[in-house]
Length: 170
Image (tube, rainbow, N blue to C red):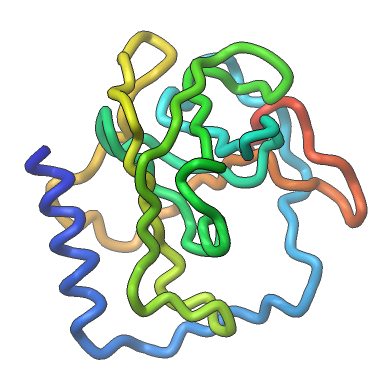
C-alpha cells in the first residue's frame, strides 16, 4: 500500500511541476512489428482489459492487489461496469481470472491531442490472489536513470492485421 501511495504522490507531483513538451506524432499507423509469443508466466503482472462482452481492448500492469495501471486513452469514455481485468494468462482465448472494476481514474491533465499524461488506474472490485502466474510489477525504490525498456502487449503487428492471441514480446 505504501508503494501505491508513493506512486500516486509522484504522479500528482509530476502533474504540478512544469514539464518538457514531449509530443508524439500519433497520425501514423503505430504498431509493434517482429515480436514473438511470450513464454507462459514470463510477465505475471500483465493484465488484459476486456469489455463486458469479453473483448480485449488494452493492456495494463498489476501494481498491487487492488489496482491496475494502464493508459488514460484506454479508459476515456468507459465506465467501471464495462471494464474487466483478466490476470494470470498470456493468451486472450483462454485461461486467467476475470475481476470486475469498481472505479476508473484518468490523470487530471491527460491530453488526448498530445498524449501528455496518458496515465490511468483501475480499482478492482475484489482483491487479486497472487500465484506463480499472477504478481504485481516490481517497482524500483530509487531512480534507475536512462535504461532500456521492453514493450509487451497484444497490439496489432501489421497494418490492418488482427490482434494476436498470444502476448507479444521483442
